[in-house]
Image (cartoon, rainbow, N blue to C red; front, top):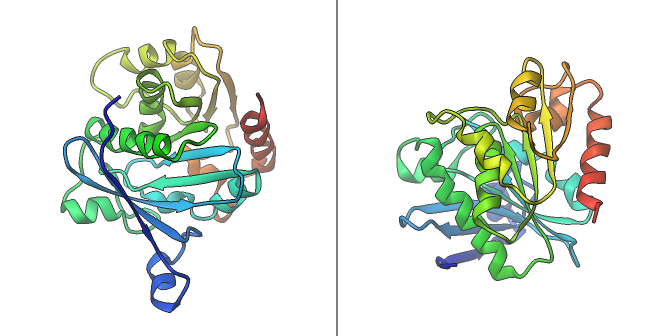
Length: 240
């Protein structure tokens, strides 16, 4: 596997640096470089002796800050988290620094390179386990990521859908995934998610009260029965 250059920039906890990361609980800001040379910004929230690292990828018109209120809980489960500002995103929950630096919003498939750069960063860190966690379009791409990179040992897919032009491509990606999959559907998504996961051994959970993507876990959304979902996520992460 070809490795691309990754830089870690340590952000202190003093006044100015703390203001820079605002809502994010991370103390480290990471700069990745995708294979096409694009600079990709991310936040790293580390814990001591982690079980592994969760690579957190957001939905369309969003950013790494989609995960700002949920990262501390994932840390409490024993996982370090890397939340990435993908080039296909926006300001739904906060500034997407990758989009801001590029001066434009990229397409979904181009953002796949950013996800690969995150896997390569995790490989350099030699984490025991790497989990690819996607939201909406990135949940679809998480399957391809698993197929292309053996370092990925689990896939968590919130609201995966057919967001790519090629018919059947997303289901095809999932059919070749060899690692455990947790797929989550929200209101109006059950049929599509189950169709995508047809033929796989994915654990599929959902509720008509859930909202699209990983946002359903955010406490500010006040989603009913979300604690039941959190228990399923924790169980999945902790399973061997």
